[in-house]
Image 1 (cartoon, one colour):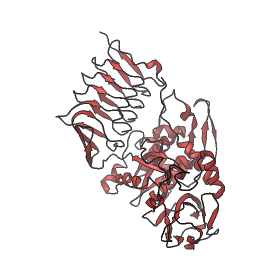
Image 2: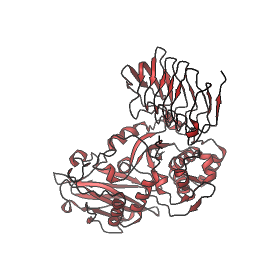
Image 3: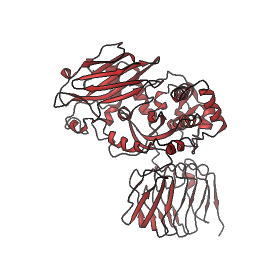
Image 4: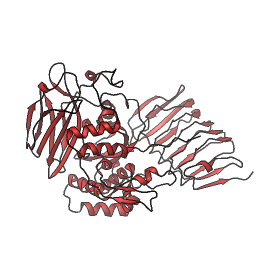
Length: 527
């Protein structure tokens, strides 16, 4: 049997986006589509089977607010039949609008400064999809925003076309609160975001020593990340080594994948007194997130980035996609670093634009969004403000897909849950400990898969079965006592748990010989 490894495809998407950002507008879109082999050929479902009705995705917003590195406002907007920019800090601006064949159908010209607008509706066909490219220089920094979807509505006015995941992203961003208590939480250390580490603190102090406000602090940290760090292609291809993704370790290595880059940026911001959090989701491009249903029902993260709060507003940043350096080779010790030019195109982005390339599944905030609902045929759950999920009922526990915004797991004292359902706690990556009720007899496949902060789990006497990949990628798991009642542990149940000491009954086979990364120690108890 071949194990399906978790895909880490952030840089595959990043390479596509980097090509798009580096070349002239029309050629860039062609190169992206050629690489992906999926040219948008209009909205006819017989030609493009994933196409959706564009009228259902007329955006309810009319502007996107971009920010310069010092906080200057650059508002891109549509109004009536025009596209315009309102700014006092932007210069060298250009807007190109391309059709589905990537021909430029409308342009603002080049080198414009300050506020301006221009007529575009006459160049557009009603209810056809167009992509807008916007280039602006502010505070000496050039930024380029590609694949902004627009159309001409049936009333003749120009409108933004929202990403199919835009409403989903807005809902998920609702956990990014700005009250004092929540912002203080986003200054505290978490696993891998060890902002209390001396090396993290000293690095943050060095980077921000001449900064007078949070705008300059965050830019200094981001500039450090995308210039000093290299993306770790070795780790992506290495299935047999456990890697540390905490900020303190990575500041010494300066080589990381997307999650490590997000962890380090977040930790440095927190150490500098700026609220920030790591965010997880799907990295894609507009061909996949605009007018197709490819990711509408998908909550399987393949990418990580960060969010940062400046002057009471949360912004999205993606240091992976702006990093120009890479680290390649067969092993970490023998790899070589290649230098490349960074960009600043994924810095301080509004959710309207960010949604064209990212589906936001979860930000690692320690509070919870109050909610409740069914968790199986006879079970329910309730999540409280402090990030605690309380589970009640009986039978099989099956949390809804994507329900992972909690850090504490509590089973009601009258709870008689007997089965942890398949993928029940998958990607609940900020829970640190779980005590299962004594009534649990089965943990189904992937039950706690990718619970990356999980350090301890109590398995009750009476448990009989631990499923396929049940604790795979629980890389902080420290100690597990498997009771004598367990008669079957399926394949790869504790794979990729390099710190775990596991006590097993005499004669119980974990099939660890097939593991990619075995636990630290497996202790077989005597009869």
